Length: 316
Length: 169
Image (cartoon, rainbow over all chains, first blue to last red; front, side, top):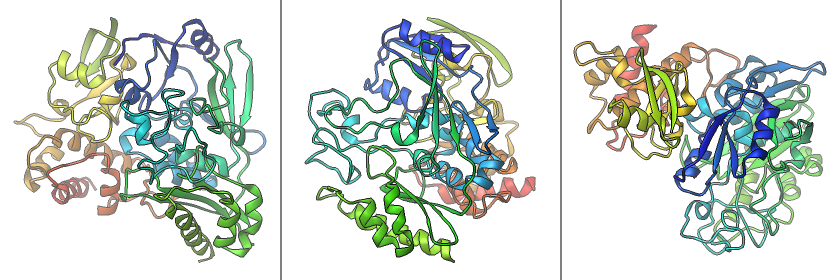
């Protein structure tokens, strides 16, 4: 691991300002992804700003009936929160499908949104990777890419976003609250949060340098049956090949977001109009324009069948 | 170098460490508490599991300096050969290991798992999210999935944890 200096921040705006003050800074909270990448020297921050002491660990009801989730709320606490289990079960289910108990105890809400891809070529520093080393090429295209993206990818990168939580957040129309180094705050809808890889796959989110996530908010509950189906190579503690997060209403209408297929949680609102016509119609609309590789074309049929199972479960 | 103070197994400890030192390396290399094991060093195997502020974590994926003021319990703090923790005794009774390398992590994790179920934390296999979870083989297997045993002693590990859960109930 490369050496780095370390400081603890006491206030969010102060942390953001500190990040601008010291070049090569990164925020650290749970550290479960960042520290792993630092050991491999994929991440080489010169300075770490420990944000764990910021008072951003509360889950609070909002006046519009929604919920504000502090950036530092641990995945375990968010999944176990009685309001989340009752009103946003999809979020609880998605969190519980991810990682291990030990990791969920440390991993934070903001950190989960910001975790990096698990593309094997991103992790292998002997291989070219445009996300890790811009301009070096992509070894995944034409390589072992069974787990990688089928839609939204580019000539430069076919990585997927690994988060289960983010899939639920996308289906629930979450909004991300931030503070910038100048102390100003702003909100970013999750639909606008992740950047398409294009020719710059190393730029992953709408966050500006030094900008710190302070909370994620959810609109008021939408009811319905909440289902998160994650298909993976092991029964537990593995990343998704694909996942389907669905909220299905009694009248057959609903929302669907997918994990494991793209650089972001994949949701196409227009495809949801097909819900009453069944899984095939929804999947066709949702994955229109998909460009799978010879190794991961199975994901398209897997999405359809997994969504079909979710619809059947909601009807039962 | 950065100064950090925390409590390990009830004892106050003060260290001056390279910022890169993980909690795992601080325990093993600086405090000579070698019960906690380094397996993969990447949060994939669970051998380094310790209990911090009552919660199990991977000590390999946490910097020691991030634990200022924390209370940490390692396998050495759970019990001793003369006075074993009930979970340690149950692992012996049920032969919940072969080589023993993953065992301290398995035991720290298992103790925390039973506390998590008691506290009502749901899991991926809990059928009803709004109900209190109960101890079952499926619940134990799911909750222990972050602890890998290459010898494959899983069925005996589940038996050991089940026995302790039953005794507590």
